[in-house]
Length: 272
Image (tube, rainbow, N blue to C red):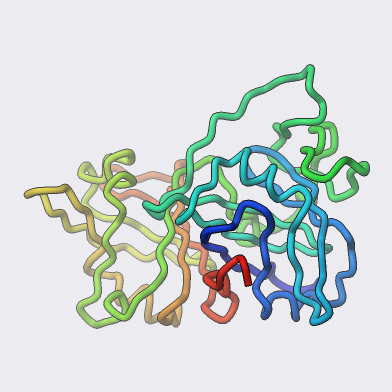
């Protein structure tokens, strides 16, 4: 597949444990990819999943998906962002109901070669494994020449996700940052955030704080310029990732990845 990776997300609805139905619009875009297997990579490792297609060409993950669910402790209300990199290979980022990424403890167990992957990058040319088993880490270095702005959304840095609503897109619009994200990253110690958009442009945005009752941090002055320049619309999904490598004394740096609304079709019931 040429061009930028295609992304979508799925909210975990009741009955999600047995299989995952991919969004119909996405299935149409990859109808020429006929592999019987999908490879899904997350922070915790790599999973091989059997692909099932119905007569209309809709795709489901079956064998291997329950293991992914179990290993990530998925619950109703959690959601997963999938980045398709080609050949039915996906990077996956898992978020909980707070809209922040789930924290995982990754164990290193050399004696169990069928379990967890511990490399940052992995090869597509892996040996055939039983579905759901995680590919051993000796296979690595997948497409390391990709430009930084096209790298996977998967990162060890903290991040949160925002689905844009009309209230975010007004002239007086503000973005409330999840409380646990604000606390864990000590946002009360900063006066502003500098957002780097997918075009590597930097946007200084003033932070405002609510200190009475539950502590809240909001992106305020400067946010309107960011969303207007990036042509954000209702339903677009933004992932805000802390950039630890380039911090300022009074500003926290965040890289922003944008998933456009036409590519986000994950809210349909998984039982349909």
